[in-house]
Image (cartoon, rainbow, N blue to C red):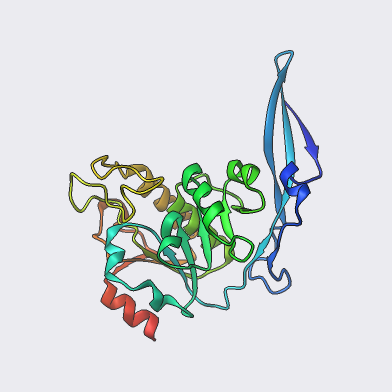
Length: 253
């Protein structure tokens, strides 16, 4: 297997001057500067050849020792007014959250919702994270997830917050269970890029990915807000389960 490296951006990135967000000098996590991604694989004579391109880091975040709030789309977060998070820390919104709330960062991996975000969001002033596939499609709209763990959107957003250097991370709308066993537990069900209400999910993969992140970022305190405690999340030392009432007290202090 051979790799051919191109010291460049993707073809679309060459056509536009891509914006950098934040200041590398004041970023909490300074070490990571970018990474190579595989953009094409060819096979010649039974040998695989990988074309790689270097994608520089474009978001430099200073946590200011404040917490991160990861906003998922489980229905339990309807109990809370997201506007109350303003100036309390850094907000990372998953997928269609932007329709109802303007987070500091958007994270989107799915092709259809990413296409919607590329059309609807002012991405020149709003950093939107995505995977290499969407970076190649819409390079001027998305920034690459750093050290991408290749997980679902909620887990990926959690990874980014940990990677950015936050020491407290609150998870809102991370239910990972069906409130009604016959209906999908998602605020945006039956809308663009989302499934039908009765296409019930199995959440095992999602919960397993989150457990891996809790263990990987074992120096971070995680808080899962307003959701039922499920078996997979029991006995995790750095994960606390709190009610929305307790959460309001936390962010008020």
